[in-house]
Image (cartoon, rainbow, N blue to C red):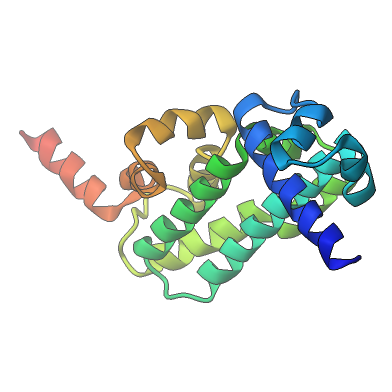
Length: 192
């Protein structure tokens, strides 16, 4: 692809990402073209039809999630690593908004790509590693913890958590009940 076509493709995908994060999957191709500063024909040439635009955005989101998990897996075993991962994932969800919902109801090939990333299993392993450091509660099964924590990335939950300020605040709020000090604090309250 020529450099000007690649630049247009990037502008189109960025514009579509912004619009779909705001409006959901209902954003029209004409609106995307207008937001990108190109004609509708350019959208078709560079990216394709509306479904192909959505697919491109979803693949980008899946790629960012995979990269975030890869980075977390290469770091030390700690609650801070999980908070940093959640912060990155909440940033991704914030960027893509309701496009994230397309992961749930998307085409089979997109669901396959998401399954290949395997976020639940990978997050569960990261949770177990952090728990072995003594920073996380040992009375919660790691598969349950991973499912609950990753559930905070669902669009409806993430939008609620965004009211806390930023992705870091959301990540800390989500992980705080799982920290080992939460058990100690709860035990102290129970004795009072």
